[in-house]
Image 1 (cartoon, protein in one colour):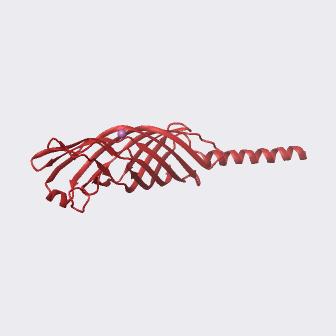
Image 2 (cartoon, protein in one colour):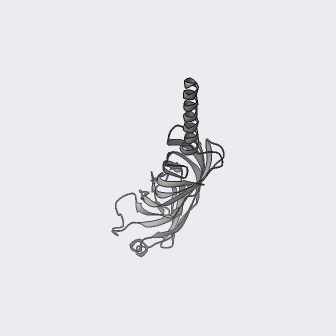
Length: 228
Ligand code: NI
């Protein structure tokens, strides 16, 4: 009798423990997650030289970092796999010559704004006994540039009509959720995006170009997530 009671208590404890573990500690098939936080885009940039009126200026361009409000949405197709859409408010990056201020304007060369929506499939290791839920993912990115412009000092020096082509490329990430309860978790992710573009512009009446700009940023996001 005593033995049976012990077994019952232990059994109940195990069931409660499992119930707690599966409902509180891991995502489940059908979960829909929304996360909001801060996303920093740090270019790991490299470019070919600036061509102006057919001449090679012998220097490229660089692209600075920018942080914005990051949003993402994820739907769990199974307990281990979700599909995630990364969105954000537009990122605006200063663009500079690859050498210090060759025109002597004392100003950045220009700035570009972009949106880098990405769709990623993520695999969760989904250890139900842990609040820490790491995952790896890979997917596709589309980056569209807009509001490309030279700074006024460089416009005065004769530069105009800056345009950057859209980019379509791969993205990969590692991340983790830390589960607080059935609804809330905190998330951190580190993502690489292959963003390659080319720029065209005018120098007076002549055409200018930078034919190969590799932005290839590391994108770090810290966010709070809610599960529906
Ligand atoms: Ni690239």
